[in-house]
Image (cartoon, rainbow over all chains, first blue to last red; front, side, top):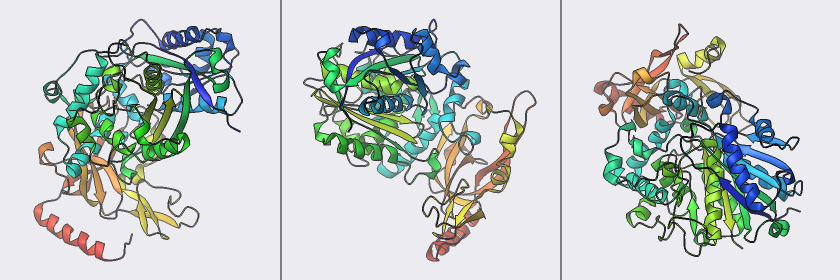
Length: 388
Length: 155
């Protein structure tokens, strides 16, 4: 019989360019915060599992599971690094959840860490393109922004989406990011700023794209029945669901729909026994502005082709009907690829505890959803968290 | 591209030079890239290699201004998702035209081109790219496509 699982502590570094910190320093910073918040000794942790897309290509360092355990002084605790491109963090959370729900472990540290800024930008673009199909996409010159641009061009063709609406996604995320002390970018921008930024992959411009960030995040998981040993405000994991799809965009049924998101969301809502109207805020995977539009539709918050209405009406801001990416999302909050899925969960936890700083707290938030995507949609993880 | 060993590039050379995919005799569906198993029929599927005509239409496109390291020098260049007349889609560069001339629905055909050169005297990789088909041909292909759609699908 599976046990109910709760998040009992969180920690996160600022996302951004951390020239003086390497992978293990970032993991340390996020991990220590979580351990101190729970009032435990690191030695109480029974299992460490964390997301990291490419220590090998970004840092020349593989085997980072054991490396992090060593640096945290936690040998011989089992430590596993999981990889699912940009969904590495979400998949790590799923694995940590399984470890506690199954009864195998009673205190698990779930993390995510990525050190990306040690390589030059062209190199980073090439490494990230490995999240797609290498042989039949990257090999022919496709870049990661390029593949999302293919979705955007087609979406504009089918549903009449305007670049101005895409720009509203970035404007909103920068507005939220300006209130988040851990965000990569804290400046506010205008629609004009987005539309006048250089083209990266038509129709996507620089301000449609998330940055390359360094960062780490960590949460501690325990069985719900033991959660109050560590915190007065445990956050319950109502559901976590992962789905897969073809690695390459060219093989998808519909390039304007991420079927992995659709499938993960359906299972998550069924598992949580909740409906879309129960959700007070969402963190979605906005690696590009078009991705946020697709996510809201694929998660079932609006019909295909209609997400733009939420932006025209300002409903995705804090204070709106469905606040989206209150920490600035990937666009302004930053995207340290392997850490992002866990960082999203940290934000939902802060919101549900009523601890979101800077004026971005969603009033009376009870239930939140996090949505993490790998590659152009080959992996999706949907997590639903609740205060009670 | 990242991996420098020659066999990595040589292994898929036939498919990349001749635009080969997989056809399942059971469900009469073509697939690209090539597969070992039909994802629809699985064990019941009967798959064989198929060479595509190379004709198709632009399903979506983008103009890459910021390329990865290997392709930096070619930017800006057009990447398209091409829907082949046999059904499957292929991702490829669209060449022999200005980026602003590319449209969704445009008729294109495969051609054989250089894809990239590895730095430091590494291999030069070749494969298919797509180019626009001129108007008279476009009309002919368009008729061919509609005739094909009227008939039962074939490889």
